[in-house]
Image 1: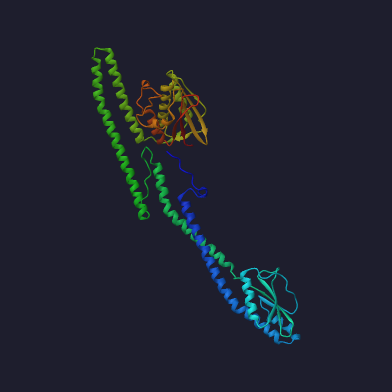
Image 2: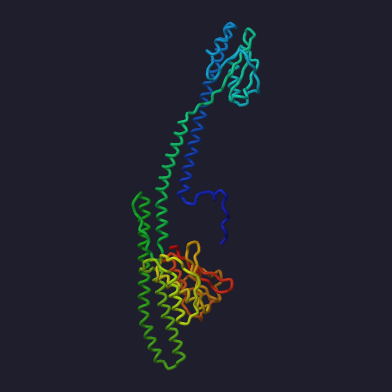
Amino acid sequence: MADHAPGPAWRSWLPRTLFARVTLIIVVGLAIAQVLAFASIQYERSLALRALMMTGVELDIASSVAILNRLPADERAAWLERLERPNYRFALTGQVEGAAPQTTQLREFADAIVRALRPFKVTQLAQLASARETVMIRVRLDDGSDLFVRARRVPMPVSGWVMWALLLQLVVLAACAWLAVRLVTRPLADLAAAADQLGPDLRGVTLHDGGPTEVARASQAFNAMQRRIAIYMDERVEILAAISHDLQTPITRMRLRTDLMEGHAERDKLRHDLDAMQRLVREGLTYARSLHGEAEASRRLDVGALLDSLVGDYQDTGQNVRIEGEAGAPVMTRPYALRRILANLIDNALKFGGDALVRVRLSDQRLVIAVMDRGPGIPPDQLEAVFKPFYRVENSRNRSTGGTGLGLAIAHQLAMTIGAELSLHNRPEGGLEARLVLPSA
């Protein structure tokens, strides 16, 4: 299978869950919409204010200059304070220093004032370096004296409460988006959790079929699917049990007939075939029951004591089985299922390697039990296939060792039932390692 090409680097910054992604998209979209709306209103108000200033402020300045021009020179000083406003004022002395207006808005503002001052002559105009949006204009009056006009362009004012109102609006919209996304994605999360809990024992969680119509319909369909699967599995186990029971009678009759046979060689061969047939039927039924799940309840188990007892039983029969490591704290699991898994793995190691080493260790707060042998191992491309029922590796493990090809399949199904992970690994020094990882206590 070809590897998937890596996605863009920016995707690594995205949240992993659908809930977080949809919430982020909605909130960011609302924030952008808010900014665009605010910018549009700000721009429109700026145009309106500019139009107002262009038709009001420059005329006020021109009117004030006309008044000062008509007054006698000795009375002009007394009128300066009366004529000044927050954004412009007048002076009889001063100087104009600086560069021409730099921004477009300030140039338009200055040009409007110059046009309104006609027929008075503007001799100098510059932008003040010490004050933003401010120009200094020197005007020549009719008597030849100079009048200095300091005018400031007033930007569009924005009240502080407006920004707080926009922020509060964004928070309210984000909260509504969060609730809406949660309403949509929560049933998906519940459905995924229920599907994860639907293990080989088929004892999943029944979803609540309330809420919106679509959610209720999906929950009802999932619950019905669970019930149908459970019924199908029960029927399969019943069929296998019936077949196994019915096969016992002809197998028994065939055994009795072998006892009446005169040829020992032929009789031994037929008896061996009957034993294999009976073992195949028995283990097939065991596999079906392990796939269907047992009614055993989980409880706290001292894995170390279980391993000591199991290894001791093998050693009492003269089998070369050793144990290394400590299990540590107890774990929540199904004792009989775990014992059956370990027994199958140890039997497999003894069958193909002649001995078994059980190594126990803790890794990332999880209990790892490794059953290792010194047998021929398994080709890497078949390490997953051996978990299939009745699958045998002919190249590495000979049929002369016996077996039905169900031992690892049963162990794998039981591991799934107790929430453990079972994997196979070829050892560098030769042999096979069956690694069982149990969830934390």
